[in-house]
Image 1 (cartoon, rainbow, N blue to C red):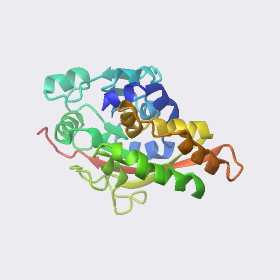
Image 2: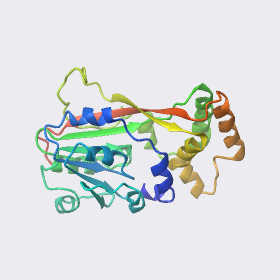
Image 3: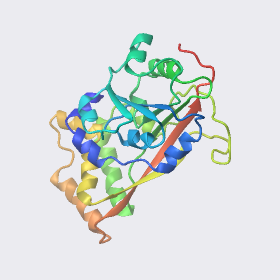
Image 4: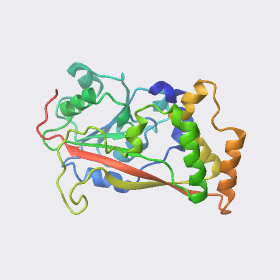
Length: 271
């Protein structure tokens, strides 16, 4: 997966949305201690920055050194380049943390790429028992307005569609179909019956070029590009430009629905 994003890491850092503070406040409210968080698949640090404002220390890991280069350097965040799979206790403890030492594990827009059996084993090893929390979320397609969204949906289905990895289907389904073997967090008025995923929304103000940069940052676009295919042809860009100008507003609020899975490790053991 890291190879898909190396060429456009700077683009990715600039174009991707940040996450709302309410998301992190909600997650943090479920961890009794705020000492140490592990942000997995941290990329350019969108989630790590927010976690650093709540947790005393954050370990942010990714398999792409290029992505990590664009992450903001913060005093309480340690960025660590890791292999795609960490299969031994010694490796996870050397690169990430000791057994039962982590309060929170987060995965933003990346869980669908992981070897879940291996990853969940590592999560259960490092999380504090029984109240350590894992929170994983994805965001689905951008929503602008009827005119832009109509063009986007056709572009997504007809142009991007053939080039998505099969894991993308898990995102399209809002993580409802992904394995998540963790206990429910305590029920309260904010979680109701703890139906998963929990829904949030993030927003990013964009002009047309920023929106187009977002489209170019997708793995499907980059996969096609590596095959010599330009999906955003002049004609396609023209359709987006016409739809963008239709309401006369240059800067638009782009909404990204967020789907959150959250659970406690309980007395789980490494498997």
